[in-house]
Image (cartoon, rainbow, N blue to C red; front, side, top):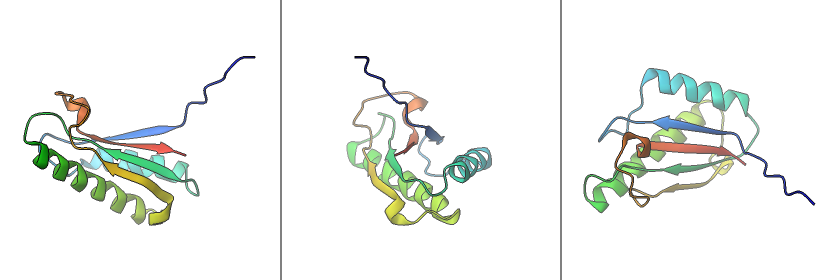
Length: 107
């Protein structure tokens, strides 16, 4: 028997260093992704890169998460469609820009 791993569609919103705002291009890409999966449920994980205090990075990832949730609600997603939504700060310990993101997974 072969185990088949089904890849769940995913979208990443990237942020500048120390910022909880995303660019117009990021906003348009997010909107296009959201439109494609209207009616589905999403889970979201917000992160920050390692530089900065643990508390600062946690708050920053929370603000990033709130901003993405707000953008998804503007295109018609209800709060209950966006669960779980968690902010993990810099828990994964990544230094690079790769960690300054919110990852959205279609459930």
